[in-house]
Length: 185
Image (cartoon, rainbow, N blue to C red):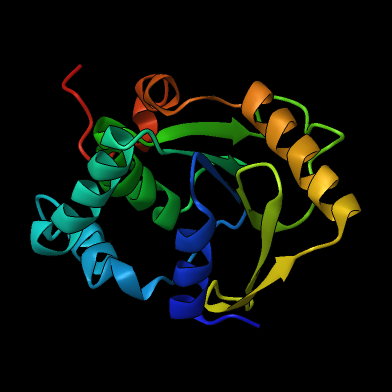
């Protein structure tokens, strides 16, 4: 099983055109977020840009080199505090930097039959990585997938999730009740 650094190296070695991520958990306890979740919940004005800024630069650099990252986060409303944080302080900024993000809200649409019960990365068309988390969303490890049948299932899940999900900006615009800072009525 790959740890975080090994996973990053595995992806970097194979990411030559497209990278797709399917997320299905309501909470991820990600060390890379620093203390931003606590700051978000405490009403602080924005993420730590000393931490977030370099990641946005990575996204912009990848886009400038013709590398495209796609993500679908499957949710079932109402959103958790973590999902609200992820959308407002993560996805909004990542999308502006060039990441392609869609939301698949299973309270609004039927679950696609091709969707599988795994979090995974699909690197290009031929390399998969299954992600493992514990019950509270801590990353446990990742396994490269070499089985062609599983890769086909990942491709089908990617296509179904992408085609059923809605662009992040539209989803966020249409769900202001999830915003931490709500517009004046």
